[in-house]
Length: 141
Image 1 (tube, rainbow, N blue to C red):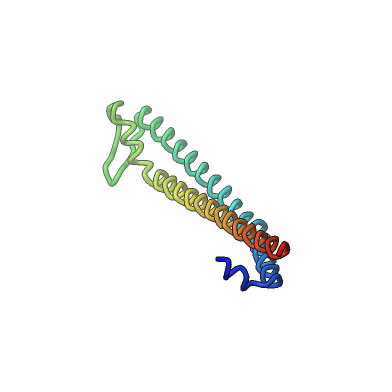
Image 2: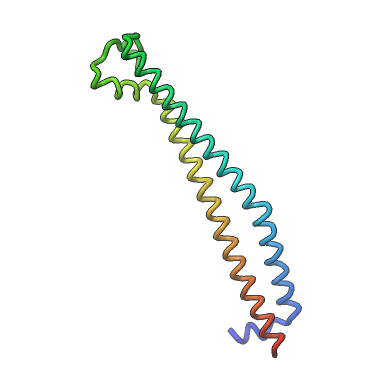
């Protein structure tokens, strides 16, 4: 490793430090902000999808309890047993549940992307620290 370090002159090391600083600035100002906004928006969307599912479930359960005739996959449903009402309501609300699953998956993906950018920043910081150490070492020699 000492051979590689001695092959880099102070100017080259300073340029590497400058490159890493620019990468950090970009990652911190552009990438992380964008990823944070996406993470926030997908969390809001997930919450909205969950609220919509809960609302539809409540509406369907109330209708079933009040004897309103509903339909699921072309089958008429009226006055089901109370023990089956929850399952039937879930079946009727399958689209809202599917939307909730999609919203949750998008949030998890955005969260993963955000965490990936944090790790990228940490890696750039580690490289920057290494180049700064080399620069200090060369300055002392």
